[in-house]
Image 1 (tube, rainbow, N blue to C red):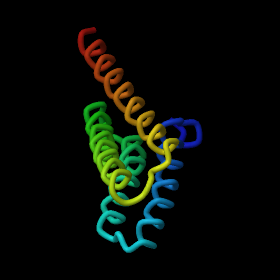
Image 2: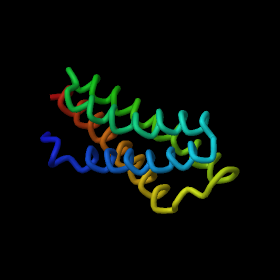
Image 3: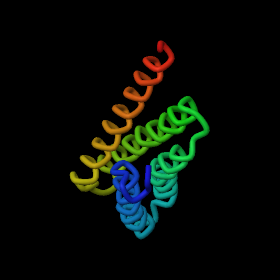
Amino acid sequence: MEKGNNPVLEKSFNFALQVLDVVKQLNEIRQFVLAGQLCRSGTSIGANIREAQRAQSKADFIHKLNIALKEAEETDYWFMLIDRKILCIPDELILELDELIRLLVAIINSTKRNNIQSAGN
């Protein structure tokens, strides 16, 4: 897939940019540990999706997307913690993360199904 025509790559990159805005706010209020955790997990989603584009096999592709999914779930945890105790996470950002999670699950599941079907032929 071309990077410019890949919605999940584009969404994850834009999401990472928005995460960096929250990280900046956290740093401004001296929440450095949470800022670091959120920065790592929130930007890792797109990095792993991008890495999956050069996977060496379907299994490698699925593996890398599963890592992205785990990072997305971790980011959701940090959002919940930060939103509850430190500062308000915008609803749009939470919805974008939810959409990324749903997209990743759908891609992983369809790739697994297609892999099983092609192995049965």
